[in-house]
Length: 162
Image (cartoon, rainbow, N blue to C red; front, top):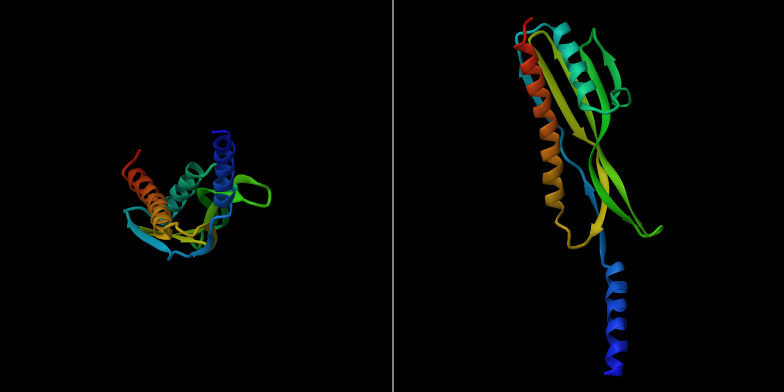
C-alpha cells in the first residue's frame, strides 16, 4: 500500500510528461479563393459607398483592414484576420491566440459587385492525430459567412430607396 502511494503520482507525472511531447505535425493550410458576383440595380457610385459602409460595419478597425481603395476604378481591397485558434507555445509554456488571414477584394461596376476572399496560406502546427480537413472546413465556412454578410448588406441597401 505504501508503494502504491508513490507509484500513482509517478505514473500521473509520467503520463503528463509524455503527453507534453506528443507527436506534433505541421500542416500547410492553403485554401482556394472564394468569389461571388452580386447583381443589383444600382450604379457604381452607390455600390462603392455601400461597400465602404459594409467594410466599416464588418471590421472593428476598417482603416487597418482597407489597404487600397479607388472609387474611379471601383476597387476596395485589404487584409483581415479571421478564425482565431489557440496555439500552444512550448518555448514559453503558454497558450496564445493566433489568427488566419485573408485578402479581401471588392470590385464594383454599374449594376454589379464582386467580392473575393483569398485566405493566405498558413503553417498550422498541431497534434499528429488532428484532422486538418475539419479545420479547412471551418475556415471555408467563415469565408462564406463573410461573403454572405456582404451580399445581404448590398441587397438590403439596394432595396432601400429613400
